[in-house]
Length: 498
Image 1 (cartoon, rainbow, N blue to C red):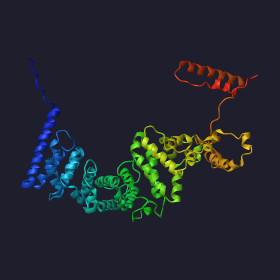
Image 2 (spheres, helix red, strand yellow):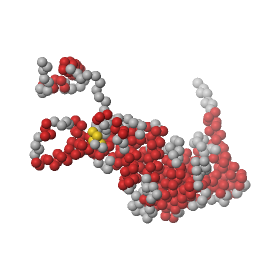
Image 3 (spheres, rainbow, N blue to C red):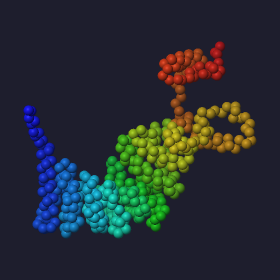
Image 4 (cartoon, rainbow, N blue to C red):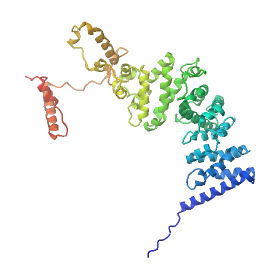
């Protein structure tokens, strides 16, 4: 009878077991301390710091994910007398809730969410960072009713107040003396929480309109970092997406914040400058994740901006007359970058956002849209959104001034045809200069064919060559295709050369 040799434990399994045993020991000490108070403050804090080292991976960390483990950490986080102990324990708690989703519901079931919300009322960046992160994690995979925190635990006021504090600190900062890193982390966590709350509790979004001036001030003071779309800039942008920017329901005057009297274009200009830096800095795959919210925000602001600001935004975002010396999308301007991204297969969300923004910039009019960006860039968006361009507008580039244009038109069609002629002209001229509606390039700047024109004999030989090629293609049986040369002969469109 064969004897199976026992499997020897690997070094990794020994490390996992050692970690498991150490976590169990530390949690045991912390649990006993809750009732016996047998640890001095420094010992308690040192024990929590040691435990925190084991909250960075799930391997061997099972005791942390039990109800007993979460309960012990929560009690030290919210029921202790020492602020330092509370913060050390909350660091452990936030890490545990990030590692294992089920611990979030355990936290909620233990009833500690209101105490976390109350931590936000304290003017302390550590408390703000940790409490915001814990509550942010509770927006996923829990049944926590945040309405209770809104109505009874000052959640809205706490977030608005913390953002006002950050704005005041950023006002005193400079490039040489930026805010401390801990402040930036706390701000980022607050903004992440704000976005999720307005996303999942839209009926409370208007309550945060009061924070808009503070968000805009921080964004302007933060400047354009390198790379441009990094925290806290990305979180500042995201936090505005669900706010009542148009101020439809709120009593706060967000309009004055977005379009200040001193320079109504300032905020729109700053956002577009961030976008300009981003499209030059990141690859398409990165922009798909990073830039789509920014484009959506710019589009949203444009939709209700004053006329003067709208005109300025169009000037920055749409192709200029000078760009039409080349086919649109071939230059090095922001508009050209955006047009290229609007057809990128690597960025489906971003390309839809950009096309939607360009359509908005065109007054939501299909003809203006084709005129502004060229039918080559507009076609996909128009097709997917079931938007049509008047037939004369699309046929304008292929029609010529033949003798039929001078024929008398039936009186009942004169007005309609004149209107269609105007629509055709809209997509074939810009500033009085004829353009190619497909590429958007000026006709007089299009490359001319090189070499002499083909002779009649050369044309005949080319037609014969095409005839043979199409006949061979038909003979394969792979595709059924009409030979255009044969079809032209049958229709009498070829004349014999003498």
